[in-house]
Amino acid sequence: MKTTESLFPSEEGLRLPPRSGYLPDLLRGHSLDPLRSRLSGAETAGLKGVAHGTTILAFHFSEGVLVAGDRRATASNRIMSNRVDKILEIDGSALLAISGSPAMALEMGRILDHSLKFYRRSQLAEISLEGKLRILAQLLKENLPMAVEGIGAVAPLFVARDGEAVRIYFYDILGAHFEGVEFSVGGSGSPEVQGILRYLDRWGEKKLRSLSRAEALLLSLRLLETASYFDAATGGVGGQDPVYPVIRILTPSSLETVADEQIASLYRNEVMRVR
Image (cartoon, rainbow, N blue to C red; front, top):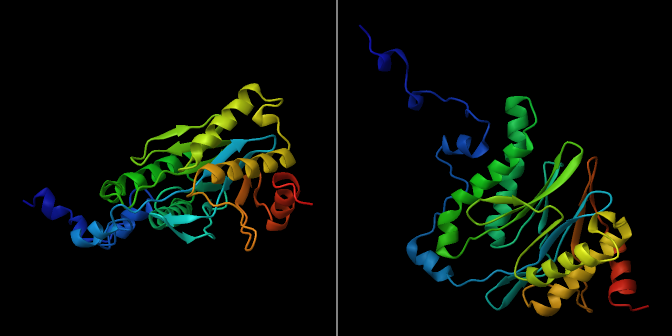
């Protein structure tokens, strides 16, 4: 009499499709771990102490959610780049604002984007909002060894549609996520921005959700300029080579990147008041 083990071949002998539609599971089936560190102890020791700074923010306004971020990437006391796009489009339906290690954060964004597309094509259905949140949480948990090493911590904001609504979530480095009901911020320049947003939403002339598009754009630029004044790791807009923040807007029906020309005009006329 054949045993159960002989009746059914092991998974090692079969190339089974991933059960959940989770792309990293498929990659691991081919001995590819997308987030596993391949650095030796000596190599990671040489990277310890590297600091990363930024300011990212998201808040509700009358049309949806505005997400903005500066463009500076730093390593310790060095400015590595002033042209990093930290507001990533995910599958045309969500936004991921990154803070922490740029290398790991950008890789997570790429994996998340491909995971959502892979799920839709393999399961013939759109993944739910809760599914998107859990995929990102799992990626952050799998990145924990790099975060513990001190070279790969990531704490993003995630903005996505939920039916006719748009919701804001913030994560810690362990993958726990929480909803930012009116707004959320991240990065080394976030304390000043968080305080201003709280004050405006509580005692300002208008609630954040009542702001027009023009008012929301202007507020986001002023917040980032304030953060850059107090936080050396948050990039401002230089006079000789102006590089403007990235601003994207997610509504229940559209995803839009605000043009540099519009940002430049607002910055000159309303932020710096140079005419």
